Amino acid sequence: MSSNRFDSPLTPRRQLVVVVVAAALIGAVFAPIVYANANEPSGTVAVVEIEGPVNTALADDVENELAEVRNNGSVEAVVLKMDTGGGAPVASERMYKAVQRTSQQMPVIASVQAISASGGYYAMAPADDIYVLPTSTVGSIGLNAPAPRTTPPVQGPSGPDKAGGNEIQGWARQQTLADTFINAMMAERGDRFELSREEVAHADVYLGTKAVQNGFADEIGSLNEAIHEAATRAGISNYSVDTRETGPDGGLPFLVRTDRQVVAIHSNDPGYADVEPMGIAYVHWESVPHVDTIERFSEDSLPVEGTANAGAGGANATDDIAAARGGERS
Image (cartoon, rainbow, N blue to C red; front, side, top):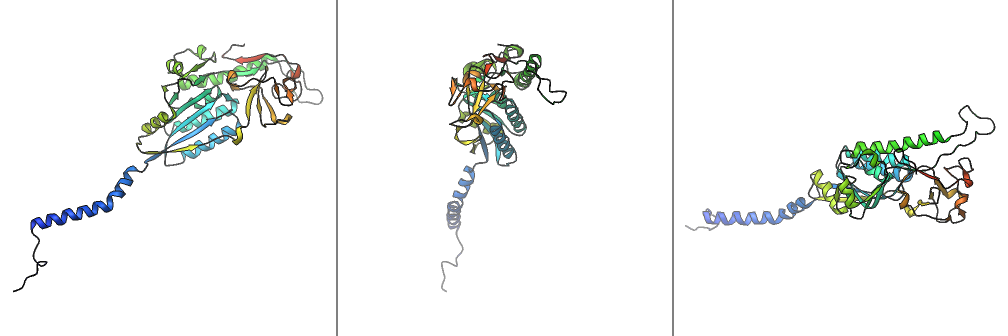
């Protein structure tokens, strides 16, 4: 009787060999897939760049980017890359509100590069933590504005409220804007500040190391460290980074200051319409470069408080600048 070795049952040893070979083959096929899945990002950290003068265009972009982030299921955390000396009050407050809404939904860490002061500090205050470099500048919680002046009534047909302006009303308006800023900062970081409200309202600025000591910042760290912290708080170990630029291209507008006020320049070769006086601003005064003239327009040609005529002092106004600092005038 003939026999075939393939018809004979497998011995236990042969069965073990078959199992080992099969396992090796399966591993060779599926290991790359398992490895790839293990190393795929489990979430995204969005880095939103907030740089340059705070104005309407920047606020528009920041609001849109943060709204998109909140509606993007893959984004687990946000880092605000800050580098601004401030700007317009309304734009600052709009960004503040957008950051506040985002921080209620996911971790938000602010990372200050060279500076985040005045309106920039306002915008990032709702972040869970503020990271700074040792040489970063933060603070300047206050208002810059020309000293209010009495203006004459409007000539000709007018309504009952067109009676001109006076210094008392002007100071009251500036004080309201200053208090709005200070109150918001105390609400956001009052439990971290090592300074009283009155001291915060002095509108001082601090380098990074000092800022961590007095509560104006939380940690000394780089942008990458801020990103890692945001990811850790979101519970993601493998993550991708999505960098989002905001603001207009080309570096415009940029801010300069005369002896009287801060102005926004909207062209590299500015005409009259390209020079926008910022009568009231949340801006760190010393971070804005000083100029004697602006191309074809001397400072005496610049209107005051956004008026084209001398209604608020005009070309003959003195050089007084009011920095509303929680009740102080300078």
